[in-house]
Length: 145
Length: 145
Length: 145
Length: 145
Image (spheres, rainbow over the protein chains, first blue to last red):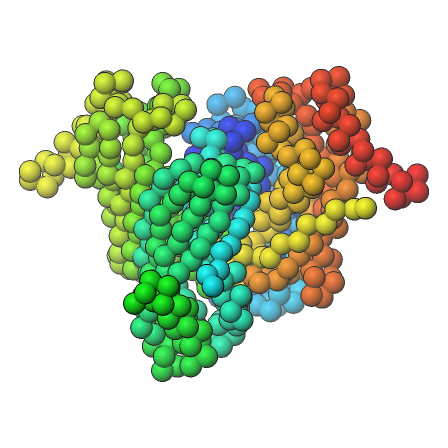
């Protein structure tokens, strides 16, 4: 049931070390979250039109394997914690050719209004809450919790 | 009298060719315009607070010489055309070590309101108009026009 | 017969004007060229392994229509000039929803060895030359030349 | 004795949320490390010419306060752990106007040869080792260890 996002590494995402510059992985993780949200009919742009946004509060990345332009990575995001106020997303990031783990990563987020003031999305918008809660329930079921 | 902006090339601005990725120069030109506007007490953020913005309509870059991380370039912007509705900015971009021309570039801009609708800034905001017109007059004087 | 590359705009490619930052289009054009080369079995990485690279010599972009995150653009590249030493690529860039032209753009390139010294690819590597020349012949046929 | 790097936020570093896109802070931290190394006469480019590079192994960022274009941040990096094989760098990142903490961040690094194979820099290059060890000793002295 899980969603996987595949994308090819672009030339402009490499640096003179010959591999992807480490800052770009944060952008790839955001892409994966956005494509995932679109796949459950809640594009980020709809969240913003409803008056909310989902900033990043914290992130952690362990760099394990280098990829470069032309390589294809797959990113499988999972909501590993969620309570309507805060959300943690974990990611499996794999090099499609070697099947090596490229990075280990998680990001923490909150929900805010358009002025970037934190809100409890459970109280504010049931539709948005349910979309994320369903993904969290899926994660728990897969883990056998 | 002319304003020159110096900046060092960052590691993350190179690509696996070992030199600055060509897309980054557009960002360097924007930096030069913004620092220049600050130097005449009209920061871009003040323009936006006044209700206007200055999108780019067209740009042209000729790439002449490669620089890489640690190199320092100087950018000297000049308003080469301005009538309150449209503005053209030219740039001298020099590698500080070799004194080679790095790129030859110009950008064209218009003035819009916050909804990105074009405005005649001469009619809308005298302060903003004068700031740019003074820089255009300086250019004409230097050229001996 | 022509190749078209579709891609969704990412959140991180917008700026505080609410639309795509104008520097990113140069990256989208590079993506289109790279995907195109892969479609004719000549990925950029194979060109580099053969000892060559294809830097950008000049670019020109006219910005016509704003798109933002979640929008999908299509880019159709065409080789409009090629002689083994220099190459010009033109691009049709369309917003998929409104069918508006997003930008009008062309880029000029040369062929170099790994030390960024210009080469005549017609004399150096027939395989690479033919790949690009076929695309140029396609363009001329479509134009009825 | 500590080194502080100040830099203004660029327009192209904001996103449509109106503030710095969170991916850019990783780039600002790299800038701070590079300017710091230059200040102790060991520019990153000299490390690479000596045959080594310093990839990022892990990073952690807590986002605390939003800044936007025109704001100035100061970054004070410190080597909080170092043994010739691995290095941890911590950063104080402050908004100059409000004096708020913008992010809390640390990065872990190793030393590799040009093929990205890990090396013990203590055994390989005394000059590079000493430069980093001096900064680590400074940190320990300041902390009163």
